[in-house]
Length: 146
Image 1 (spheres, rainbow, N blue to C red):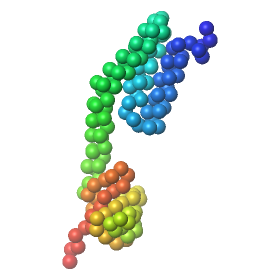
Image 2: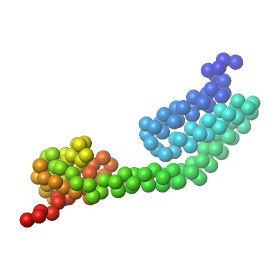
Image 3: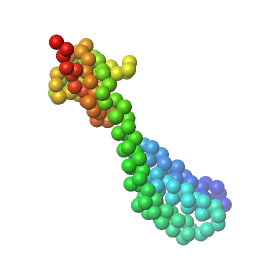
Image 4: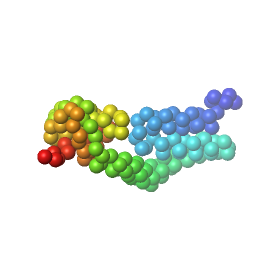
């Protein structure tokens, strides 16, 4: 039997494609199908027939998706909140003027970031990070000390 058409290779190739899709699209779902395809590849290596391989893939996909997806999503969103909490309260320097509806650039720890604000922040002025939307920092002007 040609190795490229053998069931273990085909299941393994499917697992790799699904993992690549998960990396590209971050669905938090394709990973579980990839794991089930790997389990089906193992069942093929152990000599089980096509029907058993399909059962392993189907039941494995369903079980992993139902029982672990919620936990994975919680874990991933918890990691996002930890990153956001690390930036909140950090002082930044406005590199350009930022106003409501007009995002600009700020510098934080030597790195330029996109920033939005509900109040005007002039270029060259310090501001405080109050939140984050993806890779955009939400800032507020520092209160004047006059």
